[in-house]
Length: 187
Image 1 (tube, rainbow, N blue to C red):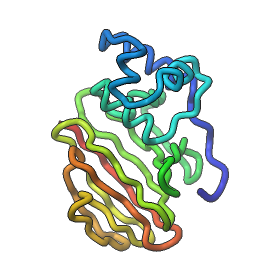
Image 2: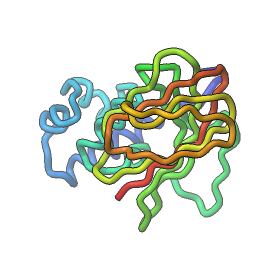
Image 3: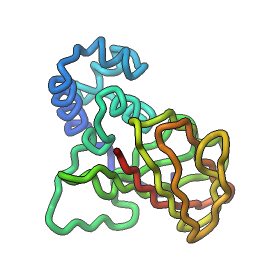
């Protein structure tokens, strides 16, 4: 991704993982197994020495049955401004794709808001999220092919779509410099 982005808040992620794992009452081994990651990887993340990818954070959030934003655990000021390029972008391992959490799931609601930067190349293939999840996507610049893996739709600037987030889904940039806003809504 172009430009310098802030580093992941590893201490907050580590604390959130320990907190949510404790709340779920499961061992480190069990959480690693449920998330499909190595126990050593989870141990590193819980000690703030790992560097999680987007896929790892989402796998852990599904295994813990919490929104991914709970693992990033950002502070919540009354008025929040995130200047372009200053949010914490979590890169994908699969594609030239990064998601920046703009607005975490506030108390009483069930949604997260992300700014996506997507470049042509390998698609970002997502495993199903929590049951009942719905994704809402608005394209800012460029073009994407997105939606359920078995029925993706081509979208351009200003286009909106919603699709089930609890089925395998994809997002692939068709033009350089593609940006989108993604709202993940949880049941």
